Image 1: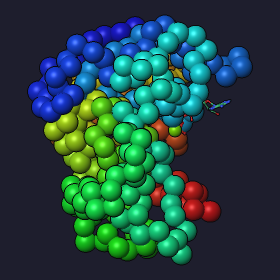
Image 2: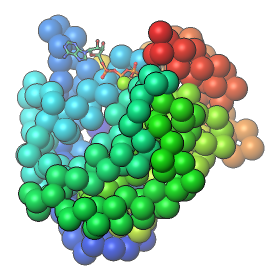
Image 3: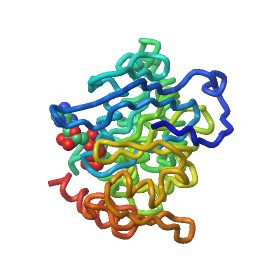
Image 4: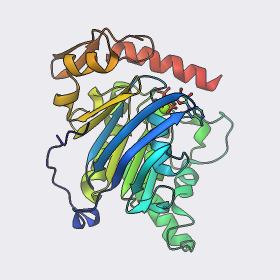
Length: 297
Ligand SMILES: Nc1ncnc2c1ncn2[C@@H]1O[C@H](COP(=O)(O)OP(=O)(O)OP(=O)(O)O)[C@@H](O)[C@H]1O
Ligand SMILES: [Mg+2]
């Protein structure tokens, strides 16, 4: 099912000059591992400048969805086009923030070196002259508010500081599609808001489409145009108002799920697997903390 419930959004910049071409297009897309189908019959067009969220419980196929767009996983059937290229051929038109991993505390790479990994070996096939690359790294660091710790080894940075660098690395070169895999995981509320705002600013200023995988809709509720909600081998697409309802989520999960709005936030109660998929911030922070500890182990 495809519901084109997205709000019309103003976009500026180079991406906005091609409003008719889809940033991401899926046709009859299915993905299965053995007998298990993650989704099938997925038809979807994501517009340039659209903020598109992907939600769903652990194992529902959110990361796999991004991997299909990156060309790292092959669809079982159907087709995927990204930035006008078949998935896997879009190269530097894609910026990617992978699901979070920390650095060992003795890692000697400095913050600006990490950002530089996104700048060197540029889309023109030539390395930028050293000074141009340095200038671009400086402006990226400033853009994400990381200039103060440019020379600090990454192993000494906090999760929130590191995530700003990952955003800088992903937006280097001005990609037309930004794929973000749980960029808010293990961040406190302030950093969740800061990182979400950075990503949305890149969207609005360059016309990049954002595909944002998240467990938690609330920090991005102000930005999101549409949601792809994956659960139990099924999906729904639509605006937050259309998808985040008691009826739709109960139908997707096949059990009674209660969605309510509290002070402009969405609270989801009664999810079948309440320990792995929560929308409530307080509980979610505890979960994120757990996962952070697990990842470092
Ligand atoms: N290459 C693969 N071969 C077989 N099964 C896979 C492969 N990649 C992913 N899977 C399975 O597909 C399912 C979806 O995985 P995916 O990583 O996309 O989930 P997710 O929604 O991102 O979960 P999480 O919220 O935990 O990050 C999982 O059950 C996973 O084990
Ligand atoms: Mg994942």
